[in-house]
Length: 377
Image 1 (tube, rainbow, N blue to C red):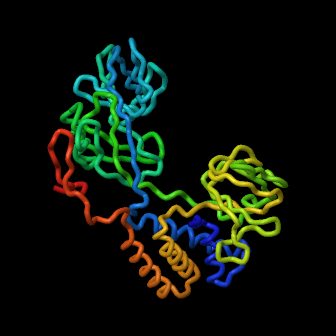
Image 2 (cartoon, rainbow, N blue to C red):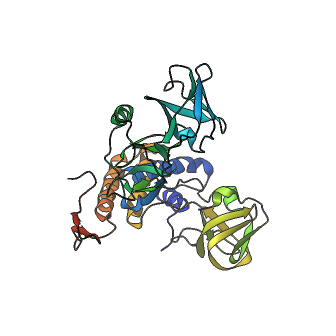
Image 3 (cartoon, one colour):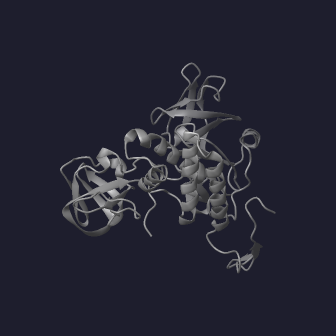
């Protein structure tokens, strides 16, 4: 089964709306596809987006002594070197804890302007520990984490509860409580582990990722300029130098020497297609599949639609609906069809049948545990 691509969805809307390939007519079509894609991929936690994630914890560090300057908010270390992860660290001196804003150097940290020490410190013992760990860049939400030594890694707590536990208990080691916060140092999210880890170990979890973005439809000039030839997995472009790094992960569709490849239902359907692994130069790239393509062959590059096959119909219906909204025409009818296909997709959304599933988990130690949903009892 071939890829469903951005190109296919645009072409489908052009045909159904009796439009043409002109850019002015495509703008509302492309907008409808992007709006539909954003909604369909996030309207529920589809099984297709479940994936395995991991963070590796760091051991706390307390070598040397620290001094703190309240005017510069700089914490200076003597007799040691701040760990590389210090920008995600918390520093405790006595009973007070401050948050690190920046690792300036191996001996200097800049502390947060709000969560900092209230007075000057001179040559004090300390401990810096890490409880914030960046989650994958495509993270949406996650299930209960599991450590190397426990069935679970504590309980989910709200950010407010996490703050209270951290401030009052100042606990260390397992089990962890956990919460999720915006990443203070970059875009995205972090998992916050409470109490703080005391050793290097792995914490694993299942999370729902975001869908791969859509950008290249295959109608753009640089996604079809020139002609190509291929030997094995190596593709060479002639007559243009328009390959860019962002094409990695896109789909290369191959036509023939006279026509650019169209959708499967067109009069000039694509002859072959392959995922692009890496772009080498502006005129060379590598594909996942190998084969031979004669020189002077026309092609397009387009982004794959990152959905499961059982979601294809609802994606098409959603595109139709959003185009009707943009154009202010037949909204009610298109919405009913969209809801019908959405219901069918939801009913099909399972990775494995529930019948025959074991309700107990046995270990080599002989004990067993009933299976429950995350957060269940």
